[in-house]
Image 1 (cartoon, rainbow, N blue to C red):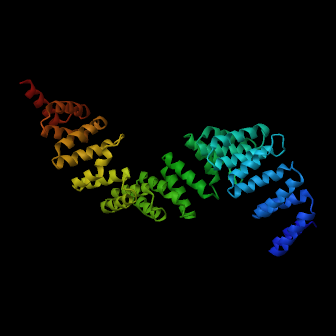
Image 2 (image 1 turned 135 degrees about the vertical axis):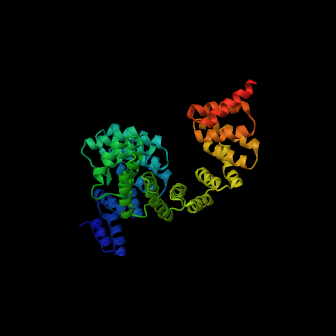
Image 3 (image 1 turned 180 degrees about the vertical axis):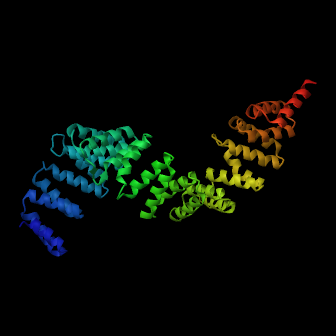
Amino acid sequence: MSYSEKMLAALDEQDLQKADHLFKQALANDDPETLFNLAEELQALGFSAQSSQIAKQLLKQDPDADEARLMLAELAINDDQTDQALNWLAQIKPESPVYPQSLLTAADLYQTLNLLEVSEQKLLQAQVLLPDEPVVDFALGELYLTMGRYQEALTAYQRLAEQKISYFAQVSIDQRRAEALAGLGEYEQAVALLTPLTKNLATDEQLFQLGVLQHNLHQETAAIKTLTRLQQQNSDYSSLYEPLVASELAADQPANALQSAQVGLGYDDYNLNLYRLGAEAALKIGATKKASDLLQKGLAIDNDAESLRALLGTIVLREGHYQQVIDLLAPLATADQADPQVAWELAVAYDHLDQVEAANSAYFQAYPELKDNPDFMRQFINFLQEEGQTKPLKLALQQYLRLVPDDPEYTQLLLDLEADQAE
């Protein structure tokens, strides 16, 4: 038995003092191949200092020992010594037998540095040298998925599937193909791939991905079933609650949606969408106070959250708190992509507070987007009539009667207006 083997046996027995003594003996007596195997074992066990010591000794004995250089690069990466890792990798020349592996290691390193294009170049170089190597296809698929280049990711994963490789590095290839298909908007194909994977045992990620896809396809009953299964499997998986609440709302289950939102906020109390969805659910069951409380808690986290401000503005408008409406919504009306609903609600609030100029501006801001909304047009017409703006009033009446041609009150109002103008 070599000293290397004896050292590993001592480590198994957790006799560190003996292992250290045998390590020194191995360095002095074992052949390079045995030492390199020991270095690999120690690297896997987390003894990076000892692995590094072996690799450096092997390099002194043989300057062409690129396997040792590659190991030193990997150890440097694990120790966050990026520059040192790149230096070791740069010393491995294209003619070296480990050069393709060095390209893969470099690609991983550049990806961690968020230099994704450089990582891609390294992987494409490796693919030329190893055209049939699954690890290259998998690495390319993972990189392209990260970059949002879903078609290229799908192509890479498809090559693995064609080689009958179902799992790589404990990752389901069909799951990855489904992620790429979902990114391309091919939700039905993605569901078809994921459903068999989740039939019996399923990972949290697989169930979450399937539930979200089912929700995107408006298969709300299936989505609720899938996401509830995930909740039962791992209630701490906080991301599940937002799509679950959205599906329950879409399935007209507001009481369940409110309960799910409150549970979800117990795991992630910074999720602003959960506050909004919970408030929407509360409003559907008439729990206005609960809706307001949820929105105010969300705004306490982010006072600029537009969706929360807009919904709370709608609630306080119904309650007749017009100044509060203005305080909430006025900052939103100045945005480049201002919601016309916000402008409408502001117009109503300004009008009730006799701020005519502001109300007039808000109504005209909302008009281009809401001119096909009869409810808006009736309020707009009433405002214009009260303010005596006869020219825009006539145009507004004509627009409204295109929408509701059999409204006798507004038909008569238009006729009277035209008669007055004819005199």
